Image (tube, rainbow, N blue to C red; front, top):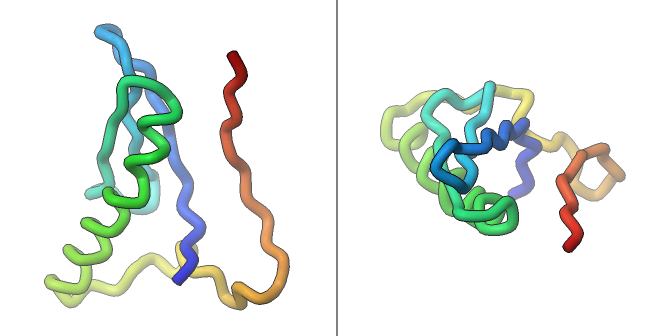
Length: 81
């Protein structure tokens, strides 16, 4: 299933990045680089989805892509060397 999730990457003083989501307060992951932090997003989302399922809580409707066969807008961060 496809989800459209807003992410915030916050640089940490000691290095690396923390990733959170305004729609899912339970969502939290990190990485030593932007790339690593974004790679960890899928696992963090899977953990939050499992938590919501275990608690019987509905996901925010804004997360679900209504028709994944149609084009949809998203933004991504691209870093270059």
